Length: 263
Image 1 (tube, rainbow, N blue to C red):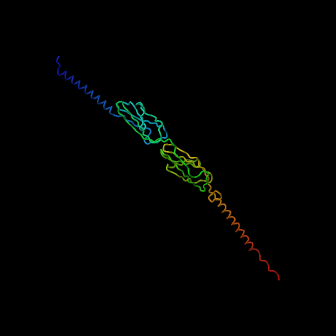
Image 2: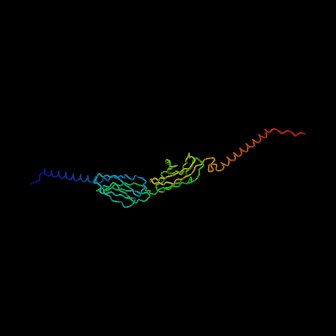
Image 3: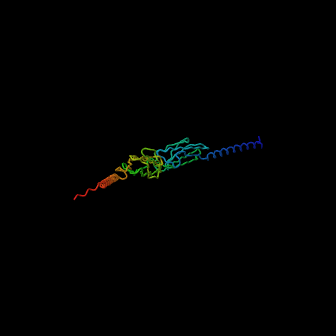
């Protein structure tokens, strides 16, 4: 049976439709596969200081195309750990003190990757602290005392210093402070305690430094020492001597002169 032009046109139309659908599907698949996953590390934050050798890493990820097949988590230039595509957290353990880069990579079924990196500093060592003045057991002859100290932290740096007097509320000082003047101290025994914090949250506290304030003029350990008492004694002795002389002169002036001897 001869094929009519009308039959040829119908088959050509169907063939064109099938080719168009195939091209459209292929184009759609390539477009979806060309979109890499979207990835963001939510913890730790960029530049964070961490006081633990165990770093908890969390992230959010999405893929609009073929779907995720794998998550890779790596530290610095080491080999990454492979996790399922559904993973959203991982704990990196045994991290040494110092600066580190954390890498998270998301891989989709088309082989596209999304990568995110954060830089952190791990510091598990407490800061150093030394109280230089006042010396424990010393006597201060003033109602104010200058507390002098030194701090150090080689990894994350010193964040702040707190000072407490006689167990009272803490007074916060900057991380660069090396002294503090305590005023209004009453005579008696006092204690000063310092605590230093580094930027990772580690801390170190000094032993309480005990000292005695003595501002009494009459005290041997006061501002004038034994000389104050000696001065008072001398003043009183001099006043008593002058009073005695004045009394003798007064008595001598009031005594009537004696009569001359008779011939």
